[in-house]
Image (cartoon, rainbow, N blue to C red; front, side, top):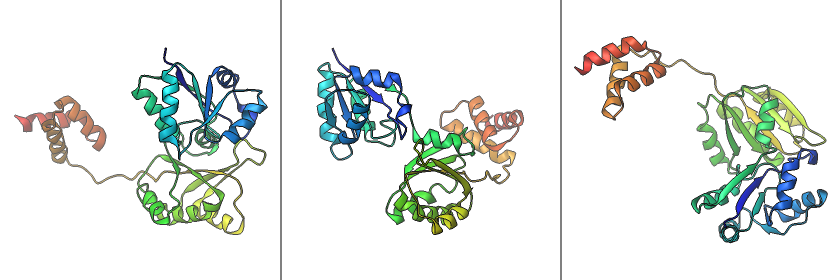
Length: 277
């Protein structure tokens, strides 16, 4: 009988956030795959969990993933943990999940802490729609290109950042994205947790005089929505007919174009129907 892969979220700072279900899952697992076995051993010792540990991280994921898969296919149960937070989110665990899915292995998530959601919830910025960007590149030219691609992003953006890169990242954000609101969430759930809400220009000035300390999650406001150029009814009809040639039904094509342009749906339908006759 094939085993199961469990994705067990671990605390991002406060051990009190580790759920009873997560503890129970680790206790029942046949073995635990960990990003850093030394870090995970501290967690296991705190909760008196004694299970075999195997290493699974960015640099060994190809070989280690195959070994873990074989053990699961042989009937063992594996719990995957990362140093902090939810496995497989901006994490090499996503490869192991994909590997298991491709081989018919059941994967279950044991939810818990996630720095992205924790920071977003306290940011004071819009939370209905957001995009998680993880860590930007350490290479400045690549980082600037990544930010250029986000200039038109209207959703709230969430980034991870290390203290030694914070000043450079904030400067590049200000130069490329322009001055906009940002929440800098530092040391989440830990003793010195702090959330600073300011603009990017204020953040650049503040950290020009103050040393960044701890791990950061940056929550950056999306760009303001700008009204596009007015679309004429004739242009809307052309868009509808183009969708029709791509196999879209008239009703669906009209609805899509009306939603995208703000044109009156009934007028657009009548005009497109007349044009297609």
